[in-house]
Length: 201
Image 1 (tube, rainbow, N blue to C red):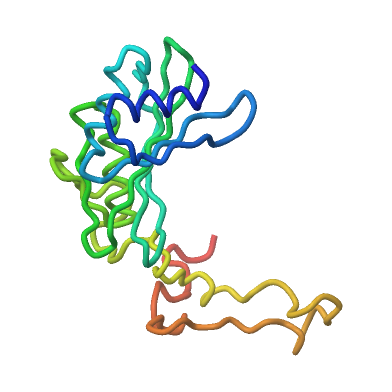
Image 2: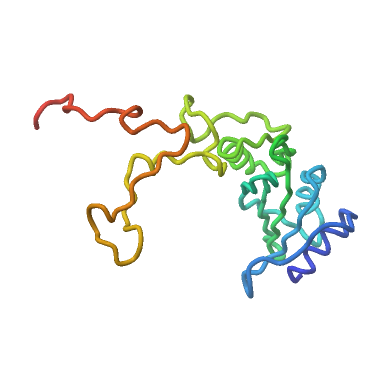
């Protein structure tokens, strides 16, 4: 099946005429992309797996994209080991109600991916057996892959380049670090430099 055929087949089986379908990538790496309503998310993943013409039996990955005021796009990539075609499913959820159905009961491999997406974006997956922290320490606050999350490294480490091409490499020609609102000075947070606890080596 061509990527266009894969997208058309999923839309036909789901019987949703308004589904947006397209193709991502090019040539040998092209794959179908299908946008489904959030309320049909789990059903679309199940249909992609169970339909004999699609037979997307391999779960590849799941993540999200922060679209700022437009909410979040949750994305899953599936692959058919029998027919050797891929399918990229996407759904959009609002920022103030960032919840979509879990697909762990369809693909057990989605467990880790949903936990990571929950932790990094703050998206809830209804029906997931346990959205426990996966990568971040328990005391961490916030969701680091949301676009409003402040990257404090730009405060602690000066910008390495000159302001404009041709400016002097040192002194007044160098860019000064800008401190975003709410981020403390580097001297006010983090471990302070001091003598080694083990003494001289």
